[in-house]
Image (tube, rainbow, N blue to C red; front, side, top):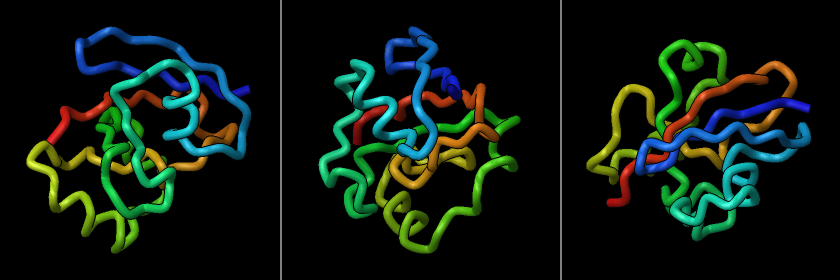
Length: 105
């Protein structure tokens, strides 16, 4: 089972063990992180599941899609490590992924 390291907005880090095949957004949401709104439910249409991926993980993830990139443009907290967690599938290859929940816009 892959483990994802999630840092919340207050800086607290928690290891979350999840099944492969779900999204990082689902893993965060289903493990008690209420600050990740995920209003669209994972349809890549709202950007309320914005996270910052640790620098050493950025190149290990699939490329950002045009839709995801467009949605992230609306966030004043976007940086080079920004991703929508609903667009990252949990697989054994991302075991140990580190993300920080972005500040709310």
